[in-house]
Image 1 (tube, rainbow, N blue to C red):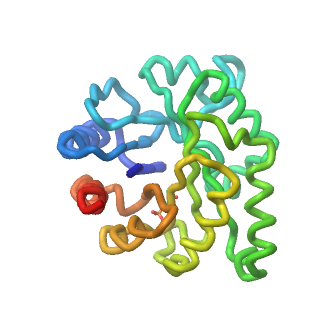
Image 2 (image 1 turned 45 degrees about the horizontal axis):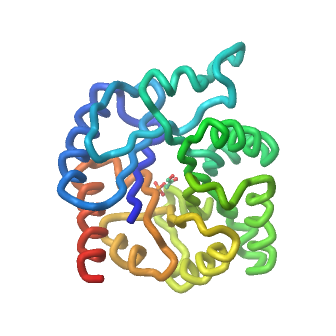
Length: 236
Ligand code: 13P
């Protein structure tokens, strides 16, 4: 399974180095696919053996005049080949449009990056019913090569991110089943995943892994989630 930690705007470089070392030494003992996305200024030569380190964001350029952004050159310096694109915080807080997100997707696809592409609906859309919700989510697939071989999709309902609120397990299964028809890519769930709900979520049909924010900030807790995934796989 795919177990991913989005550290967002947390942890300085010195803390991130310790965190990744701890996570990686645990991940090595498992067969899970583990990803960690540190803050940009916390990137380093991490020398991981099992954990894949990725970028939370980058501008679709090799380099150039894009104040405050980093480009391909900066990712290559750390051998990064994985990137998160379309995260709800970038769509809703930073105002990234679908058009811009598609540009970013195409740029990093052309460079062969593994892309974790995030989708998800705000609460008012969810409350408008399944049809409205699926229309909204479908628009987030527009312009995206859903058959890209290095694609992973993460379904993260906006209203479940950092709130402790979550869709029911039935709802997750339902949505994931509908989304699986749109793309053969592995499909992660994200939004208020914690140690105590990891097992239930990973046991849902069509959930291929999890993308974890706040609960992943503790290396022991994140390692426990990896362990839970391993135990589920061992039973299969
Ligand atoms: P939380 O796990 O804090 O809800 O965040 C989820 C997320 O946004 C991961 O990308």
